[in-house]
Length: 568
Image (tube, helix red, strand yellow):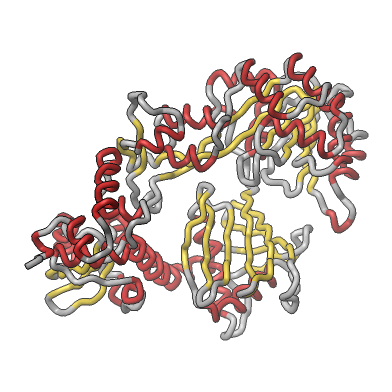
């Protein structure tokens, strides 16, 4: 008779018809390299579902199984028996209690240390049930999110002020004293809590995404979206209306995209919020971009530049004229690099002017111009006026069109230093992008001093950093197979929200416009030819820059593979 409590996990999975011998052998062979638990490895390889593992794990260990639907139905009044930090740290959730016992869902029922800690914490006997990691994580997020929503609202309301709407910041809405109807009050509190949570977690974006039955609220932390709450779909109308009111948007228009803005004040901090509303099949999706306008406190040494690159970059930004272009997608840290550059070179004897949309950081000692397209204050119109303002150094937030590019390049050719950004994939393609916009190759080649592409990779959380053995596939994909080295990753803890990452660092691809490169640009060579010549002259690609961060123990295989493409 087959007794699962005396069998190995793989044998039980085969007995249940979930797995066959060939699949099990493949997983066991992979496990020799990855050192992962077999169950998690099988899920990652797509051979079993999480529910299959929960069922079989329960059979093997003799504990009841519990699934996501039941985890979400727990009485919120008993959740707080276990503190939130403890629940996240030990992946455990209370399901029920009596006078003498407490039922706790755990991913690993054999974690006797956690069981003992819960018994000491609650003075109750623990009965363990088995839950899947993803389902348990979602349930913990959901239940403790609701608790935070209740407990923190009053404090949040007393600490936030919002300036709504127009560019002149004239309309102040104080959320602690604003008069709202009893019907609207829950949505006022909910929006306020979302903003508070995003600011507290150092988020750059908030996504409010309607689904079939719920509204997913996610915030972007260190470049990656993380879910913070899932209010019911019935709350969508109230949420969108409240955000539209604060952003001075048309609450009656639900068929067309809209863009607005507001500003948040928390004590001495002021955060500019750019709001975008987009109609979807389930309702209006809202994305809010958070820009902290406080004093800029970064410098070139903290961006992540390698020592040799720091010397090179420092040399080019001190040239008397020419053009420096930073390229990369939205959110790759281009503006931060530009401001760190200005901070490095600004002096009392130079006139520095910036033209931006929006002004992301406020810095003393420079003149910053905010674009207002509604009244005709555009990049091109501003630049024409700035030429008469006797500038020495000019920062243009982004080169978007031929007219802006033409003015910027001519400005750099007449004895001025110009900084700007372009959306492009890497440094060589930035050159061809400028030519595609409509700038003649001879002007691009003559004006550019330096092109630098950059990305941001998440850095390993220092609190839970540990040694890690990469898989053969990871080593092969980064060309590190056969190289002996100690690698690291983050185990996951409360400080990093169980992600293993906290903070970000830049990786850079620096293309110096030396004579051979300029000649290729004059000849209108394609980007692959330019790339090949630049690599010959010592340019480090984004992928190689990421591998350097990996070897230094700053980031992980996952981040390098996520942020860069393979060099061919």
